Length: 228
Image 1 (tube, rainbow, N blue to C red):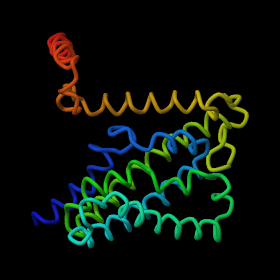
Image 2: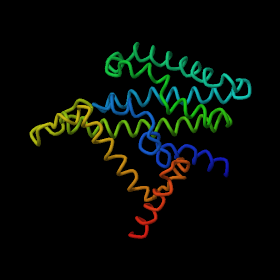
Image 3: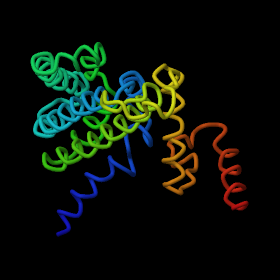
């Protein structure tokens, strides 16, 4: 039972507690670039999830074989192999998605989420746990992209998955499908995520305890906590 609980925890952390986009703030570039439509968001999310799971499995299997000095080039080679496979499948079966994602599909190779999970988790853990970790992070990434894409498409074009929703109700707000709109929605979702988590993070929790301003930040956090 404890094993199942541990795997469930590994899966859910990527969706909520350690969401790669809203909490860890990784993969920001594709998150902002491809979320002008919900269908594009799903395409990018599914592609990244497949690469995450497959690369995590292979890297975990080879973790005792890959020399430490060349682990990053080895990880990138494995990831690039799966990205190439995914890109060829997308080109063959969903050319519209391939055209919409453009350069951001092959750039999955250097996506911080995938390389980060390879370095921080898959290279140190068993195959099953690594696969579950990759799946959880991929689901969290896809869900965030879908939420961003849905909001931006709905408000910016009045449609959802290409189907008219707000027709006759309100005029589309075009700024939402432009870069400023992406940053606006991204910021709102991060603020909402922080609010729902209900946790005040101190500098040492964020990994910036060595910063010269860390002590001042800690005092500010304490004052804010006292006011509440």
